Each structure stands twice: as structure tokens, then as C-alpha cells.
Length: 520
Image 1 (cartoon, helix red, strand yellow):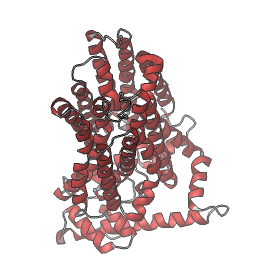
Image 2 (cartoon, helix red, strand yellow):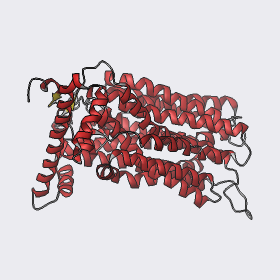
Image 3 (cartoon, one colour):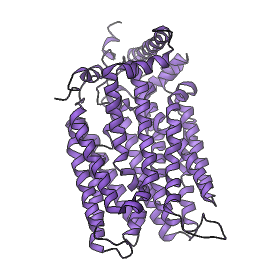
Image 4 (cartoon, helix red, strand yellow):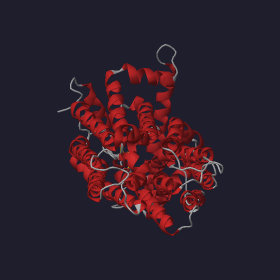
């Protein structure tokens, strides 16, 4: 490699704290990174990040809007001859159908992205978002509503994988963390928008039609993004993978804002991507012919479960992803308006907005703090706030008879939920998505895929069981149960999760070779 190219290509992977690495298929591409000498990202990459981030907005909106929808449905989905409000089981099935379909589609997202391209998968997700919104808005039965939410689940499962992948493959290495984490901000912003829309339509919308507008409006940003995506480029890495090197070079020129004066930088970037793709292809070929005739996928499974450090990495990643959901956070996103209706707040959708805004603001703060404080430390600092919030909420519920809620206790519960949400947004809301820095390169794709599926599986369990637990155990004991899960998770993190901030991917994965799992 000549002297012009050498400073621009690095054999060392990007820092372990790079949030871009929570995706699977691109994680195998860690051998080379490309850099720019610019002090800030180009306007072009900002525009692409914003355009792709609309999917995060849709993801957040569809997560948050169900909260307002459930308290606005009334008897709209019941048979005309037997009108009745939704039961807890019916609400749970409607809510959990989205995460269940996301769980089913997420393992195939990386295959679709590598086969069809990142851009086409985003476009397909937009079609599904719009179709799902339309089906929900036109629903007259519970079955139709479940179908609409399921279609949205397919979109969420695909978009939650491919959008960060798209951004990370376009972003120069020095700006990748900042640009990819913008997708997290878009998700929390979408939840805020959902609560605002739910409150506005609940207050000023036509009775019986407000909820249809709530769910139907989700089609609008999907249509807008679908039109924008048609003008967006494919990522340079995918273009090189399919042999369109000239087109990849033109995209890199626009991303780096370089023409003739930056030819060396562009050439080095494209050459690095070509080397990266060749090495990944060769590694797959070797896995297919290695061992006892095992193909690449079976070989990866055997390596993941047969090597001690890989098993440990999978255990930690699944612990973090499962805890992120089993702590009960999304029960608040899905059912906060239902909870605040029980507590007697006059405008429950407006009260729910407080929860969403708290999540959004603390998520913004976490983006600036997590690399400075460290992953392990920020979890050990933030989870106790979650436990305290849950126990305080349980204490508040113990004073409330839901038939005649007490105002003072209701305020205690609201404040405790805000404490809990702030603790979640600071730590568990972000750290699990840095899972792939735990895995060795040859099993990173498979390990990240399995742990991400753990997240969606736990999400499905929470969405299906929360209201049923509230009925069976009482609200107080439900929150105590979540506090117990958080306490157990805290102990496991303290015992087994090493600090990986500031380490290369090889160094982070190597920690798990030690008898103490790398915990200092």
C-alpha cells in the first residue's frame, strides 16, 4: 500500500464502543475502516442519516401509539350484537403481535440485506409500515387489528436491523458512532410524537374515529421515506459486494465530499472495502470446507457453542438483551395510558407524554456519557435507580384501590416511573446494542443475531403478560417482580460483564478467555 493510502486505511477495528456494531452482517467487516480528514460529516451524509432515520421514527411511533390507541378503542372492535371494551387478554394479544412478528423476521434480515441490498429492504419496510397502518385504521374486528399490528411487526423487525446497518456502512469511521446513535434518538422521538398525537386526537378528535387517525397517520412518514429512498444511494460496501465498484466510488466521493483533490482518500477507501469484502468471502469459503464437511452456517454454530469465550460472549449478550425487555420497560411504552387511566389522571395520554419525554431527554444525555463512563459502570450506576423506581411504584400502588384512586399515591407512582425510565434510558436502553463487541469476528454475525432475537422474544413476553400479571398479582406485586428481575440482572452484570469501553474488538472478545470473565 503506497504512502498516500496508508494513513487512510487501518488494520485496527474501530473502537469497541462504536454503536454501529450492534448489527450482524456488517460486523464481520471489521478488518478495515476508512477515515476522513474532515472535522465534521458532510452535508450529504447528514441528509442520508436523517432520511434513513425516518424508519427509527416509524419504529418509535408504532411502539408508542398503541398506548393511546388502547384507551381510545372503546367498543369499536367488538361485535355489534355484543359491544364490550377490550379485555386484558385482547389488549395483550393486539400489543404483543408486533413484537412476535418482529421476532420471526429479525433472523432473516441480514440475509435479505445481503441479497436485495440495504436500500431495497428499507423500501420494503416502508411498504409494510404503510400497509400495516392502513389495515389498522380500517379494522373493525380484533383479528383485523392483530393483522395490522403483525404487518407493522414485519416492518419493525426489518427496519430495526437494516437502518443502522445502512448508516454505519456509509458513515466515515470517525463519525460512525455519532451518526448511528442518531437512530436511537429518532426512535425515542417517534414515541414522543406518538404520545402528542394521541393526546391531541383524544382531546379534539371525533369520538370513535380518533384511534383510527392515530394508527393511520403512521403511513404518512412511511410514504415520505419511501419516496426519498428511491433517490438515496446504496451503500459502498454492498455495491462492491455485487461488483459495482465504479458506483461505490461515486458514493464515497459524495460521502467524503471529495472530488479531484481527494482522489487518494477515495481510492484508499474503496480499496479497503474491496479487501474487506474479499477477506470476508474467503473466510466463508474456508468455513465451508473446514472440519468434517460442515458448511459455513453449521461451522459457525459449532464454533459459537463449542468455544468457551464464544459461549461466554453469547451468555452476556443474551443476558443484556433479555434484561432490557424483562425489566418491564416496554410495558410502560405499550400500556402507560392504560396505567394512568387506572390511576385517575384526567388526561392519561398527556401524562404518558411525560414518560416519553423523560426517555428522550435522558437518551440524548446517554449518547454523550456512555463512552466516558463505560458500559459496565453506567449499568451498575443506573440499574439501582430502576430498582428504586419500581419499588417506589409498588409502594404507591399499595395505597390505591383502582376503583377510587388516591391523588397523592398517583403522583408518587408517576414520579417513580419517571425515575425508573431515566435509569433505563441511561444504561439498559443503550448498552445491550453494543453486544457485538463481545464476539470474535468469525461468530459475530450469528451471535449478534441470536442475542437480538432474545430481545424480541422477551419483548413479546412482556407485551403479552403485563396486563395479565396486573390482574393476577396486583399492580404492586407486578412491579416488585420487575424489581426482582432487575436485581438479579444487576448481580449477574456485576459478576460476569467486563468493561469493554476503549478496547478494540479483539481485545474485548479476548477478555472472556480469563477465568474471571475479564471482570476486574
